[in-house]
Length: 394
Image (cartoon, rainbow, N blue to C red; front, top):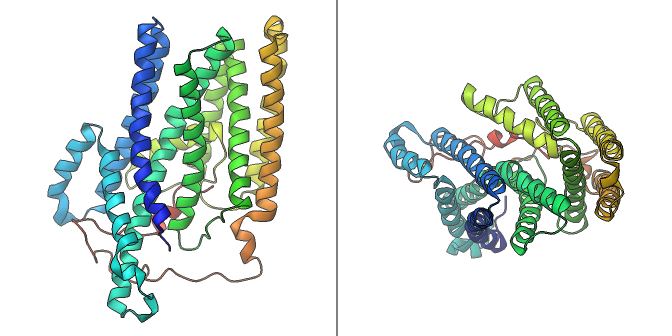
């Protein structure tokens, strides 16, 4: 388990990115209202508010899971902060604090082999706290991405397609949404693998690029296809997304996910999984993915082809426009590139390939075989790394 200065810098950067995202949402919604585009302004606020409330609910639930009985008095303050929608900032405070301790601790410069067992354990626990704090934030960003950034991306593309031209503000929103979707998905993938003992982290370079291209291209292709469907028939669009969302929810139920400690939060979690599966594939239980992954993208291919055919049938005039020609070609090309990148990643670069023919039973030092109430900091109990294995796995 490693935590570098680069990880610390990116944690600090995450705070500014989070605040910038909030500022952009407020700015865009105000501009919409000033231009009498009330529906677009309300939708922007709706997506931002719903995603924020859901993120606060999960964040508070995880704080409850991680606090011990003696520290329940502190939960009142944490509850108040979450009610004022400041739970994410609180998590960033813990993440930066633990990251600083793990990165700039004087013992970090020493050879850990020369440290005694107590100092080794202390340093290992600091690493654990920093990694798990970052992983929690990456999970919450993943939720926010598919509940806010992706719908806003769809909204801005729809405005572009229907009106032909949009303002600089809307172009900025599109760029922020694309960056947010790509960054949070890749960051989640890397953070989750780093936090789980038996998952090797993805290597920087071609492996990371192939995974990034796979997610970016398949997501972009599908989002453009969805926008085509909205422009053709809103009811068909709503029906398709409902069917896909319900199918994803049922799949999560069938897999008997057990990520949350309460039934209500588990149901909400499965709903979120269903929404995420509308846009991209995630392995819900960390099991073998060849068959479900193949089925998922076969359905994606058929759906994309069906949407393009439907555009020609329902809106032949629109289908002959220049913007449709450009975007439809981009849709097909990006889907092909995305699936190609997916094949390259799983065939050549997936971390599991390095363990073919070998046993992998190593444990991270200082994690297993210890009292779960040991090493409390501010009443916070270190998390069981196995909790991460219950989350959706890329």
